[in-house]
Image (cartoon, rainbow, N blue to C red; front, side, top):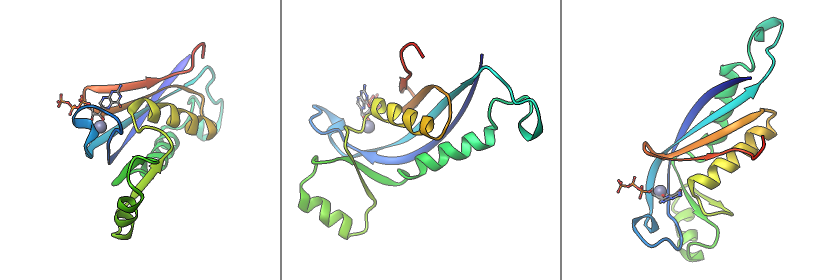
Length: 142
Ligand SMILES: Nc1nc2c(c(=O)[nH]1)N=C([C@H](O)[C@H](O)COP(=O)(O)OP(=O)(O)OP(=O)(O)O)CN2
Ligand SMILES: [Zn+2]
């Protein structure tokens, strides 16, 4: 079995609704997203000969996926007063509402599904919130 790793990052702010502690406040991270792609066969000819996938394609797809969140404030739906949200949007801030608590765990499973839907055979996704805090997502038995 071959396992390839490629990564990209995005810089964005978030906060955790209902959290007792400093992470209840808006704060930012450089979110580092590492994808592990697996494959038991290599291409036999052409541009991809002896590769599982082209690192260039994988990196491009990870970047495309995470760039959506870059330099945004990610908020869980319903975690901010409607008026506050409207004012921020009116003032031109890039706010991305998500239907989950924006934790490293939830991003890891979300990015797993997104890359899988792009056709990759994903082994694991790692999401680093900080250089020392990382959540991994993998399918059981997979
Ligand atoms: N299991 C999880 N726990 C926490 C998450 C998470 O996504 N999954 N997220 C947070 C916060 O977002 C926080 O920013 C990160 O945690 P913390 O280690 O407290 O932050 P710092 O790196 O800034 O800590 P210092 O050691 O004080 O610098 C919380 N928990
Ligand atoms: Zn955080």
